[in-house]
Figure 1 (cartoon, one colour):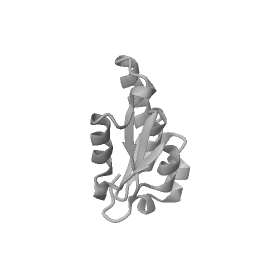
Figure 2 (cartoon, rainbow, N blue to C red):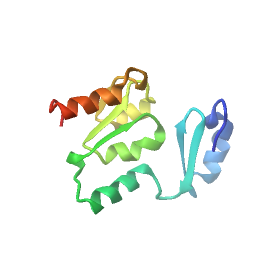
Figure 3 (cartoon, rainbow, N blue to C red):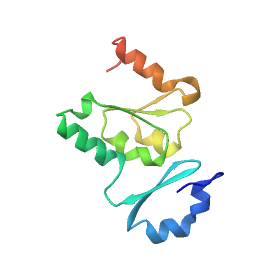
Figure 4 (cartoon, helix red, strand yellow):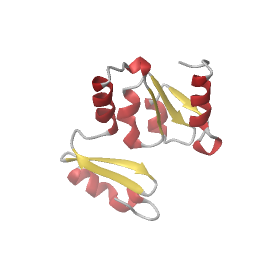
Length: 118
């Protein structure tokens, strides 16, 4: 769902209360709320990818900034929240990097390629 100012507020608590147990509802940014079938989320998608390609959690990097990233971050041993992520995301991640405005993801990826991380 999209709202041009604040999707989470526009959707409202009543929507989450009514539909939260029947569909997956998660904030995906200031202007977006994800609404999908139960069991469909970035974490389950990453799990299927890891299983298909025989990739361990220790071989996985993940980056996130919003609620819809939390399940994915939990599947990666090297999980990073950007500094401007929501607090819930920072708590779920193993590490916090610079904000997206300061190229936090790029800095981590460059450090990995230089052999300094992971």
